[in-house]
Image (cartoon, rainbow, N blue to C red; front, side, top):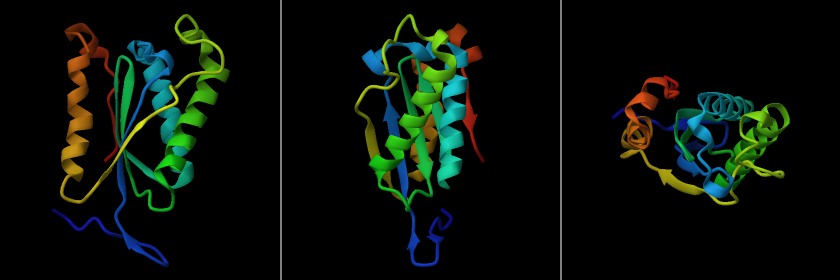
Length: 152
């Protein structure tokens, strides 16, 4: 496996995270392909602004898995706060009509999240899991239209 250490002015590091977010009330809002696409775009936009890389982003009907790399400058809770906060604000402000029948009030995401640090030994394994494992949540018909976002 290639050396994945990154060098900055004051550190040499590798910091990767596997995150999972769930929408409020665990509603299946991601069955709508447009909700998936827009949510994905907002999270990628915020990650780029922060200078972190989203290497994989996949959805189940009622959750999303995200593989974040290059995140040494931020605590995991700060990355979660910014990704969830920005995507929630933008989805509720611009696209509430897409999911207003399932979510109400000022909620888009549930309050919690899953986070696991990922070391060099399992980086590719986690990326593959995120990219491939979400297919089990979709019917055969849904898999044809399932949004697949992966950066190289």
